[in-house]
Image 1 (cartoon, rainbow, N blue to C red):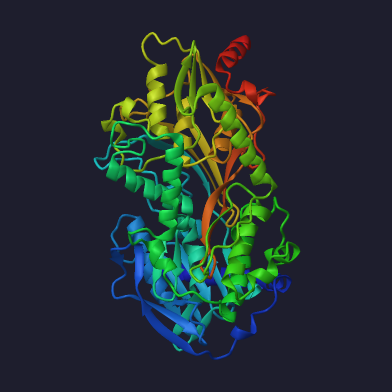
Image 2 (image 1 turned 60 degrees about the vertical axis):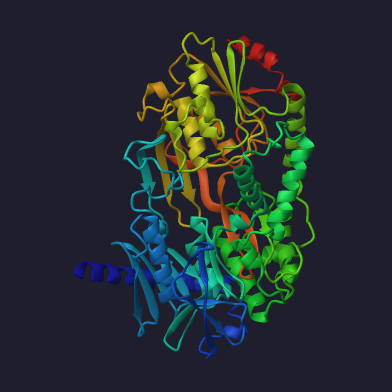
Length: 637
């Protein structure tokens, strides 16, 4: 107890220093609190107990969840920090595999007007209602899993199976630099905190953005219930994938019409479009998305419109990982400069949804920032904004390259191909099927449904007895990225050791970790699992379409020097995606604060500008003439 008390005193002193430094900063930020929430005023508070769905229709928070509303604004929910602390403690305990018993202790100091959350020994959060600030002594440490690295590049990938056997990827040495103390100054942004009537209230969206978004989760509200899920689940593409998965499980496959005939490409496209419409329009099956969209439509209250704008500025100022690259000093000013400000403060939710779509697709215009879906309040979807110059250019090039490849190699290309002494391994997306797949129980021929399975199959073919293979070409020319664990697996296969780095632009934390891949599925991690050291000549084919993990992998090869790059400069994309919602319930993605990097001479460099090839190929037509490419490769030696 004495140790904890000493730590609290020390952190309070640190808090005072941070407040002193933050006072000057506040003067530079947006205007003072909106008049609706001026400090010292007394507000009318109404409590409602609403159903809280915990990621599934059949899983609910016991007895409902208390939600608060102020001054008649029934579309702007507030949560008490004791209730939300219990919720977060339950979630983090489940994440640690300890059941749903809350592992956060909530302490209220009425005299100081503060609330403290304590988790484990040193993981704390302080809420100062007097100063309208939230402080994390260790932002990344507070939500991390106890048995995972400080910043988990593998995103919870299961490295050990249920029997304790090593599984697919091993984690080796790590280098971790803790982030600095993070102070979120709500006062600077006009975002309120309210201590009244024994309650300690913070708007739900603020808590969701800064405590759940880093876990790829959020809280939705539609006046009738709360929903705890990921914004990506409300992405039309995700809904389509779920519909397709259901169809496959019910029919035994998309390509089989049941009479021995295969679907044509036109029939498959028509079916996909029907599934999209079924998913977006609800179909016959209840879903969290349908429940959310069943909330009452209507205008946004002035309170929600004002708060929604200020909260959006606070989130993007702190969590958008490419703010410096876009030369954005302040998002409130940026909204004014781009003509979005009036629409974002409008009481019409469709206007505000349309502004978010335009912000994501046209103005920010990076490959990880994407509009998903409108608010439950909106009667109609916003008019399609199209894409900005960067997205449009990349999509046009992707379409062109796909057409060229199809003409040269046929429609179904991803996978393994041999041309003489050269093996081509084509990976268009880094797909991982999940921790529940038993890769060790399946034959390599059965594993080609995802990227790890394709690598396992390719490794078996390349290393078979009397193999003619001398060259291996990894084709990432149409790779848009995907799951980081799969990228680590592929790098480990090609190089032996996969070294990946991550930097958090919000907290300043840094981590580098080494990984190895079990490719021959013997639960060991040794030279039998890699192409390195076998005398093979290794290449990677890239283009400006190679994005995100499709850009990170070539960077790893460039840093190592063993795998030579062919083609043209990659498309960049250094930040992991961060799914967010607005305060009124719009769903979208941004390039988040977790920036994929490479470390050189002890320093971290982001990979957003792409990597230059070792051997440029000037014509895209030559990318997929694989016989000619084999001749070119062999001419290099």
